[in-house]
Picture 1 (cartoon, one colour):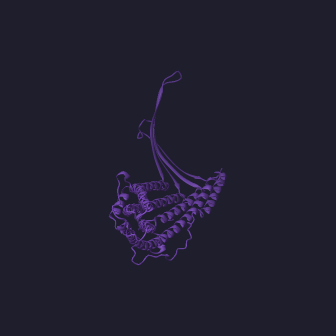
Picture 2 (picture 1 turned 90 degrees about the horizontal axis):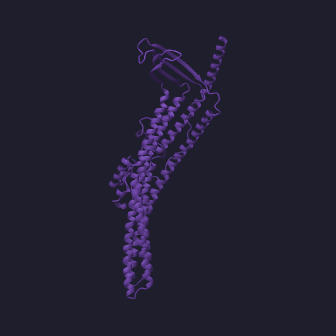
Length: 475
């Protein structure tokens, strides 16, 4: 018997040594993406540019926009959804962290058993009461439980960073939606103004036609111009309604009672934003921080999956009282104590645990590429926003000069037509040029505003990691 005990003890020692030899490969350094960070931007901002702050929307000098932002922060559905996801991640982190502590259970009960007299025997009654306090604890010898808790903590961090990303996306969407609404209304104002011009010219053509100085063709052409301007209004009115409704949904208000757009789009200030160094951008974007946290969680999950291949050690203990009297544990109770240690090692699971390790390793490699893609996308976003802000500003200046010259050309063409020095084709051409220039100028103003918003968003909107957590759960 003693020989058998020594034999099994030797086999257990060998198993433990083999497990310890494999323990070195449980935890591995996290993979990191390889990205070349440029030293500067191709279109740097001028020296007088403003820095990105957390309330960046105030740079646009619009009290109405600030009101919409406050409304969105208070009741936007997207932010509420993101907040609930954070709460879910917090609960999951508590669940994962519970495995690091012992489990305690208390059970108590009483029972009575009665037998009635019959042909085979007499009546009787048996009472009993018992209470048991049990404890169990899994020794985290390989660090698998700690790795699972670390994965949950990093997933919680990622959800908090995702909430910050949702907040930034929401505020950028509110600003862009507001600017689009102002632009559509400006285009509607231009369309009505152009309709008035076309009707004024039609009145002149009609007078000349009735006096025999203009042909029926001229009259038909100008009537066509008037009808074309009238036809341009309904699509703009529909677009304005759609934009207003979309903005209402963003800020969490019913579209039926929501209104905005009291300012003129040209009264909105267009800030010039400085981008700083490219390397600094990578620490100011919550989506990049989320990708990093997800990678850390994947690395911890890989360590937990590897630990599942190794033996687990379980400590158990229990203490109890029992009595033969109902609801009484103080009258000559029977005391019981027990303690135990259990060691379990997976032997055959048809490759399930190995498959989990391979899945976790592949997931980590996938998130490395996702992390690298997020960095490249951030650098691209800033570069495109800087270029767009500069080019649209230059284009707006040129197009404004086109509008001024088109207005002058229309006045001259209309005057020459009144005096009979030119035909109606010159007036029609001047009208078309002015109408197009005004509409394009309004849309270009929108592009400038959206480029500024895009640059604020690409630079993280003044976000800092400390705004979400006081300390990072690292790996």
